[in-house]
Length: 214
Ligand SMILES: Nc1ncnc2c1ncn2[C@@H]1O[C@H](COP(=O)(O)OP(=O)(O)OP(=O)(O)O)[C@@H](O)[C@H]1O
Ligand SMILES: O=P(O)(O)OC[C@H]1O[C@H](OP(=O)(O)OP(=O)(O)O)[C@H](O)[C@@H]1O
Image 1 (cartoon, rainbow, N blue to C red):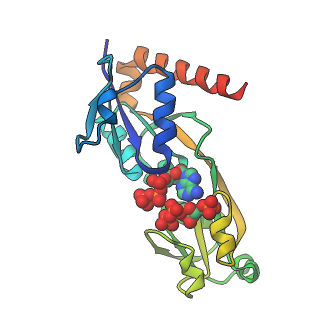
Image 2: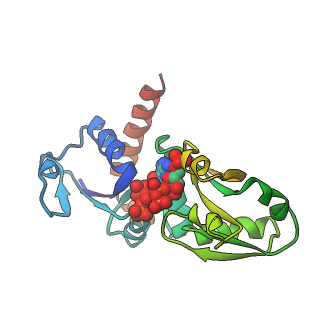
């Protein structure tokens, strides 16, 4: 029996991720303490897990420091690591979009070079390349909607969930890039060496998803 190590994304996705693991019977009393400890062992000692910055989850999984990761599709695409994406967990659902002031639609559809502010430079680059659009990408680290408002950029590439942030700032979705949700990623070597354990976990996860869809 191999121990399986999970890398889990901190932030928005963490609560539901932990609830799903609980449904699989993977619990960790230790984690409920408010300590500075980072790496935890499950109560049955079969699993280890840790929470990290979402962007680091694919890195841990790529290097095999974690066998399995749970993280948003946006992070998987942007980090572009060598990992297997094996399951859509169907929560944390939102969309990657191009957004801006409504009158920027014409500029976006023209041949002119446009400025794009984003936390996701790779996703933006690949999207506009696929559209044969020439763009200048400006990397921001948060509150990306400020870009068009203060005149830093023409448009943004960013996540939209309820649309409230766009609306409150006079922006609209101009183009949809891709749907997003939390996904399971697996280290390529663990997929072979720990096949039995990984396969068993994925089967259980699929069952949990089916039950929640009923
Ligand atoms: N409204 C939303 N905005 C952003 N991300 C969302 C939203 N809804 C779901 N998600 C998912 O949650 C993940 C981001 O969660 P998190 O709380 O860590 O966000 P963050 O604000 O980008 O974090 P950071 O502080 O590291 O920049 C995204 O990768 C995405 O897959
Ligand atoms: O469509 P909505 O429901 O309004 O959600 C989308 C907003 O939430 C995220 O920002 P976040 O709160 O993570 O802050 P950040 O911009 O600082 O990353 C995202 O970048 C959008 O700004």
